[in-house]
Length: 292
Image (cartoon, rainbow, N blue to C red):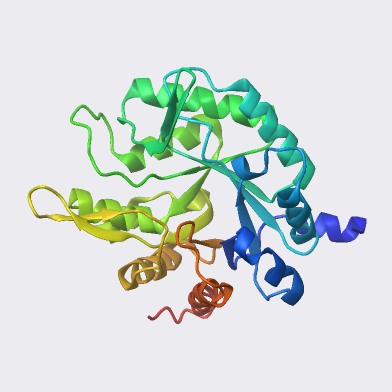
């Protein structure tokens, strides 16, 4: 890789659509070099020292910008961050020089037990202080700003002291981190908790958003028969989420946008088509023609 090419790829993500890099698509991507803006990978899938995952990621990284998305730091956990995990993350970032690194506003571990889920947090001053301390530690360790993703939740805490938007604004103010705005998560929560999704986007601090996520959700119902949406990343983006995405770009302008499809991964052509649809919405925003 030439120095000039490496420098260009290591810069900011282009304001285009990207997709998650999946093993099912490794060879097709390398054989066809599709016209796509960038790829995102889950950090925890590449924390081994070698093997096929690194072989293919290295080859993709030579051609495309990459964003690194973490799912295992447990930013909101009550205990200390896992230093070994954080050190592995630092090595991975140094190796691939991703354009962005992001993590979730959630907790997923207790003591030495990893729960394999992203669990919600109460929006209190105590939680805020803990999250900010953890973000400061992450950013100091990896030597760069991270993005924090808004969650999808299925229960609400009675003892919350501030709204999610207020909480995120204060996290950004105290730590200097950026935000990852998951539009599907906003829509899922709006149905599950009964608020207006567009109004949430209107209040969101979009000036700090470095990346947007779009994904699919499953439709279920709770014990009372009310609709319950599950953020499962296992299907195409819903039409209502596309509409909310267009509204988001009307406020934020073009942003790097990931199509998340982590379960029941489809053939490449289907995933690529979702990315091209996002690219069309971004292009329409550039010419002020937002319409679905």
